[in-house]
Image (cartoon, rainbow, N blue to C red):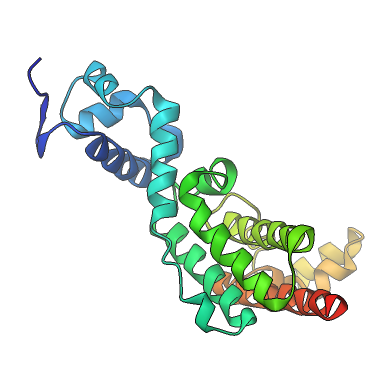
Amino acid sequence: MAQRMTRRGPLTRTEIVRQALVVAETEGMEKLSLHKIAAAVGVRTMSLYNHVDDKTDVLDAMADVILGGIRIPEVDEMPWEDGLRALARSFRLAALEYPRSASLVLTRRLNAPAAMPVVEAALRVLNRAGLEGAAAVHVLRAFIAFLIGTLSREVGFAPTYAGAIPGVTAMRERELVDSGLPAVAAAASELSVCDHEAEMEFGLEMLLDAIRRRVETHS
């Protein structure tokens, strides 16, 4: 059977996945389809099936590309707190390379083989801190949950409240108070904006404080 050709050369699984990411980042995940991927590659849709099983297979492969972009820091050379900080920041940078596709990693693919090097590095850090077995796994899951929540907010899959609380005026603040939301009124100026990197760093330090106390109880 003749090799299918694309605008960039022979059709490959790698090219299909690469173009799927381009389509998702350009048009959004909700617009992604095998038909659009095939058009972007320059072949008929049926030609894709020689390299991918179905759309789910493509989505999983896209997630693996994002996960594969995580640069694992040299955590064994760092204090454990710095190791977790470095892993969190590397995870964030990899997700933000593909912000419109990041939901694939955050919601469906963190148990993929491509994610295991990150899990390995995090567990080694926690083991050096003095947490092993179930204790390390519990902390790892809390760490992952924090990252998923923070990044979901940053890429637009979770609320920031910034849009729900527009610019604060005396009239708007009075309306909030009259609606029985005095605490929201008092914090409205802060709620109306969101510095995602600063929020992640703040939450990360809170989590590290909690892990530090857990380490102390196990020492």
